[in-house]
Length: 209
Image (cartoon, rainbow, N blue to C red; front, side):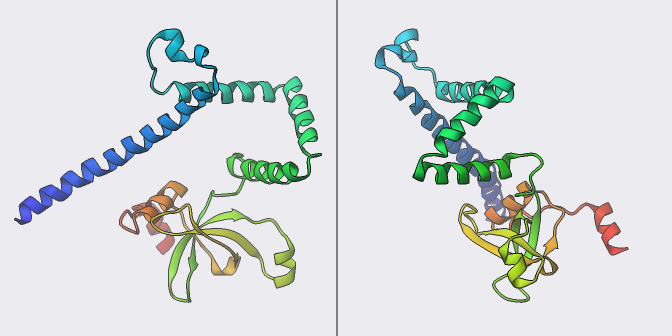
């Protein structure tokens, strides 16, 4: 029985991640295929080619994004984007939503940004208990001046669903920066601590000396 149990667990560990991955990819492909529903019925790929092409919505979406990026990267495209943003900035409700989303996207996606680049360890929900968090910003704001502390903005995700969590402003002196990558930190959170990144032996020796 112990041997059968070991084999059963090993099989689950092989097939469960694969099955979840296939389901997520299929869900994403089906979702992106719905983009084609915006086309008139007579111009859909099924009507033009005669059969359905799985994943065509993903290809078209990626192509549109790349084409938009190529246009926006040149001088004429940047002027068109600036004109477009000027028009949106004059619409009362739209300008607030657009500016907030644009700033958040630039902060997270930009290679030079500091958001979600570091994994931190903070004491939560009380002293002596530690959890993982991600640095989202270090800009000096009103919180810095009112508290008199060097405050770091962090996002503390919940487990096993990291899309929900808490925004905390933590003094830098109460933060421990970890060497693990953001991907490793997310894996550790999603697995509820089962998947712990292996600490490099040379790095461990350097810390102990």
